Image 1: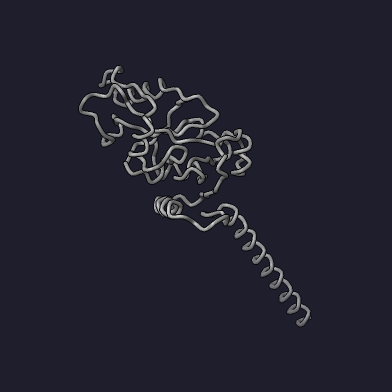
Image 2: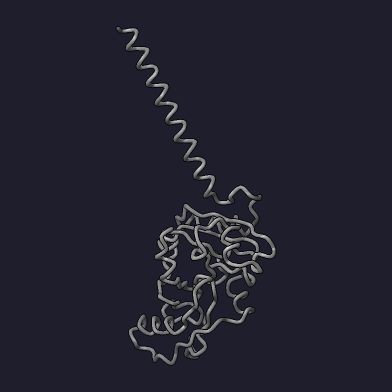
Length: 226
C-alpha cells in the first residue's frame, strides 16, 4: 500500500507540474498577443520612446502595429482588420485644437483649464462636437471666463506638427513635444472592450492600449464631445 500511495503521489505531482507548465505557456501566448512590438518588426526609435513613456506611467497592456502605406485610403472595416481590433468603434484619432478666441494672455498650454491648445481623442466614426468642448471648458472655469472666449477649431497642420512633434496621420497624445492637456471623448471610455487604437507617432505606426490604464496614467478630461 505504501508503494502504491507513493506512486500515486508521484503521478499527481507530475500532473500538477504539467498543468503549471501549460498555464505558464498559455499566459506567455496571451502576452505575446498583446506585446509591445507585436513581433512584426524590430522596434523603431519612436516605438521605443513611446513604449518607455507608457511603461513609466504604468500602462502595461499596449501594442504597436505597422500598417500599409495606403491605410488611410481604406474603409474603416479594412483598417479594423489590419489592426485586429474588435470593432471600428475602437479606431480613434488625436486632433490638436486651438482656442481662437482665447484672451491675449493665453498663449500656451501652461493652464490645462484654460489652454490655448488641447488634444482631443475621438473615434473615426464619430462627429466631433466643438460646442460640447466649449461648454465643458466654460463650466470647468466655473463660468468665470466669458463663454465667448472659447471657440475651439482644428489647429493648422504646421502648428500641430510644432506642438506635438508628429506629422499628419501620425499624431498621438503620447510623448508630445509640448505638454498639452488631453481630452478624450466619453464614448471611447464606455466601449465594452476597454481598448482603443490611435496614431503611434508615425504615419504607418498605430498604437492600441487599455482605455482604463490610459485614463489612470494620463488623466485626460473625459468629455462628451461627439
